[in-house]
Image (tube, rainbow, N blue to C red):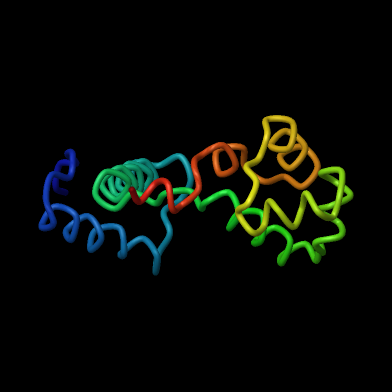
Length: 127
């Protein structure tokens, strides 16, 4: 059995993927050395992927639109949450920025991750 180590390049990563794939057909018994190896491989792969292919959180408006779509909320629902339909329209069109009070409400009431809501809009991040 090959010793586990930090994945430093694509070859290491590919080998780790090959090694972990064997566990998908025959999952290891819990609390065994094989289960420990599986968990460590998963952590090493996750770490490598996070370092090499980070996934940025969505822009605030995208996060709001996604939550509206998945929960069946309308723009009127957003307006009730934020105080007015016009405010909701301004937020969704990008004419108005979110305040911290709005971020708090969206996070607490609709469960949108605050990390997605507090970053600058996509057009600002690209500059």
